[in-house]
Image (cartoon, rainbow, N blue to C red; front, side, top):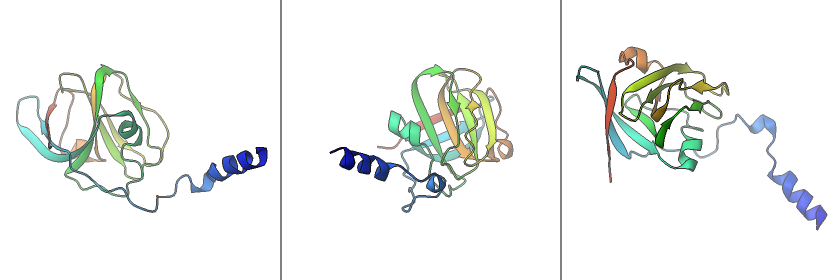
Amino acid sequence: MIIILAGSILASCKNSSDENEPIEDPVEFTSEGELYLIKAEGDTIQKLDIEIADNDYERETGLMYRTEMAENRGMLFVYNNATLHNFYMKNTYIPLDLIFYGSDSTVVSLQENAEPLNEKNLPSGKPAQFILEINAGLVEKWNIETGDRFSAVRIP
C-alpha cells in the first residue's frame, strides 16, 4: 500500500522544467460580457468583450496558459468587497496591464506592462473590488488614468 501511495504521489509531481511550458490545449476566450472604459469626464474610451472571473477558481486561474488575446478583449475579476489585492504573472504568457477599480467602478491604481511568467507581486496599493486585465501597453495607448471608470454588462 505504501509503495502504491508513494508511486501515485511521485506520478502527480510535475517536473519543474515543465512548469513554464504552455498547456497542450489552448484556453479559448469566452465572451461573457461587454465593458466600456469611460473617462472621468464621461467620454467613452473603448468597448471590450470580457471574460468574467467571479469565483475562486476563475480568479486563481485568470489568463494563465493563454498565448494571445485580441486588443478588444480583457478579463474582469470581480470580488465581493473592495480590499487590497496582489496579482502575479505565474503561467501567464501574455504581457498585461492591470487596472484596479474601487467599489464605485473608478480607477484607483494601475500596474502597467506586467512581464509574462514573472511571479513578483503586482499590488493594487489601494482597496479594489474589480480588476481588469488587458494587453500591455493599452493603458498608455488609451490614456487610462486614476479617476476613469468602467461600465459593464454581463451577456446571458
